[in-house]
Image (cartoon, rainbow, N blue to C red; front, side, top):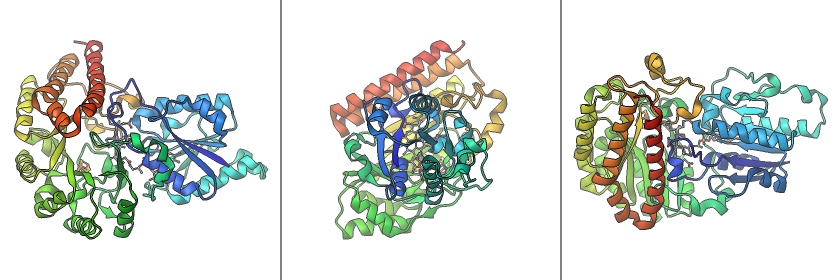
Length: 465
Ligand code: B12
Ligand code: SF4
């Protein structure tokens, strides 16, 4: 049986970082690991490919196509599934990925056969064994019936599944499966770069954040030997660790540092970290910087104490300032993220820009507060939502989804645009990128940023004054 695993192409219409960079489709690499023992499997990464999907399908002739997804991918996945079924009806289509976890119902369509809400070795094997039998048509019963598999919603069962609530399992990714694309994968200016995980979950539970919902409300660390193995095997000079807060545990940072020293490993590392962890583990972080940690993605979020409290962030604006002073002192770059609160006034935006000047992160990224369906925030802002939750691609953390309280939507977008332009030109981003990664990177990233600016300008024109 032949399986084609596909990542959808960049969505031109939505506001998303995919314009600027993309990393390896590590979820598909994990699915590949499980399936490669029994089937012929290939990854077709449409973020890095020019070839048309149907052309590829004609050439490869898969029995099953697996499609991965984020919130911005609902439309592309549905339309790809439709095209595939219209080309050849008996190709079995399975949708998976983050969006399938949060909203499996977004893929309950006549063109999709199975939606995998959460993925484990066990449920992947169970589903693919069933599909194999069904395609061989050895068992007539299976033609009209499917077993109920935890986490799997199948069309023949009217997309009903068991009530078991599971999580995605971290499976060792097979990076050879993306060999031909790997030169294209980057993390911001670092190219080529690989991504990996060393733990799941986050005990901080910030109110706006989806990640602890996805992975659990406490940190669970993967076996350190398998972490070491992954680092050893990665060929790229840069590794982005996508744990929610890699700098959370002193012991863990030290274990990794010991390993890097023992094996004399020289790589660049990038990771997510919280202000709280940075302030709690200064010595260990300093050590890690000396062994290759180049940048931390830190959620500073806002300049307002009240906002931080309402987000249940667990740190103060003063902590953020202390954090930025410390990271500058030890030469750790901060790629900060901020949230535009829907109640901000014109003065707030102005104060916010002043605050960014104080923190002075090397890179700043922004997103409007997005009360993703299922989060407590969704209920809090329900009355002020500008779009229904089924308007999936609007919920991409790039677009304003809550009606601003103190100005018109158009004015609000103007303030957003002003802030982005200010930060990218007057403050730091352009100079930092050129200095750090050279003109070519600046060109690549700027091309994406201009695209984003264009999209915000369109939103200003579209929104009512
Ligand atoms: C690293 C990362 C990025 C990186 C790299 C992404 C990449 N590969 O190119 C960058 C910075 C580029 C990025 C960008 C964006 N990201 Co991002 N990202 C992440 C992060 C931190 C890790 C993703 C990851 O690799 N997870 C690990 C893998 C293993 O998980 P997975 O893909 O879900 O795979 C598992 C299963 O789903 C399953 N699976 C996956 N595919 C398939 C397919 C089939 C057929 C099957 C059966 C199973 C299956 O297999 C795996 C088993 O464990 C997550 C948070 C998180 N902890 O997941 C956010 C996250 C996924 N991103 C998110 C968002 C919103 C975005 C952006 C849209 C943001 C924006 N507006 O710009 C863009 C989209 C860019 C794009 N077009 O791809 C959201 C998604 C929300 C949602 N409902 O979908 C998350 C959850 C963060 C958040 N805000 O809470 N992202
Ligand atoms: S610390 Fe980061 S990952 Fe953890 S809940 Fe808060 S925002 Fe989410």
